[in-house]
Amino acid sequence: MENIGFALGTLGLLVGGLITWLALRVGGAFRELGRRSTDLERRVDELEDDAERRRHTHRTIAGLEDALAVLIDTEIEAEAFQARLGTIHRILGKTREGPESYSNSEWDGNREGAKNAKKDERR
Image 1 (cartoon, rainbow, N blue to C red):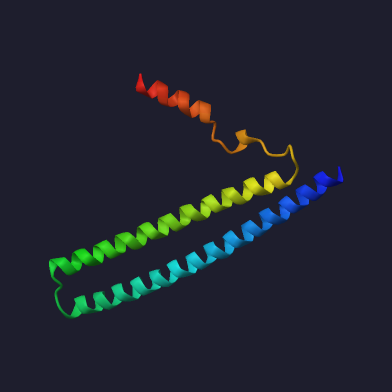
Image 2 (cartoon, helix red, strand yellow):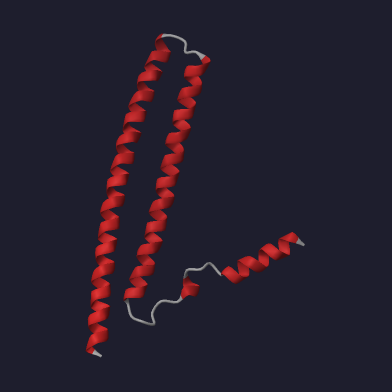
């Protein structure tokens, strides 16, 4: 019985270490995204100031629109990534509560129901 407690404690430490490592990596990635976002926004502001002084060509306007589209897409992806990390954190937290505490049905989104709904849509 002591071995199970020791194994669970060790597993908990490993999981905690993994979560900490992931949090540090994600934090660094978000800081980098924030820096890039700030740089792009500054560059867009500079280009907009230039636009007030003179007319831009079609290519310049297209470049600005593309840069903004990439910036918006990056922000959306960062939010989705953050949500996935939250789900991972909740699953691991539930798993750490005990050997029988995790129920796959809580997180799977009713996979069987989704499969049956897709079959019904095809008919």
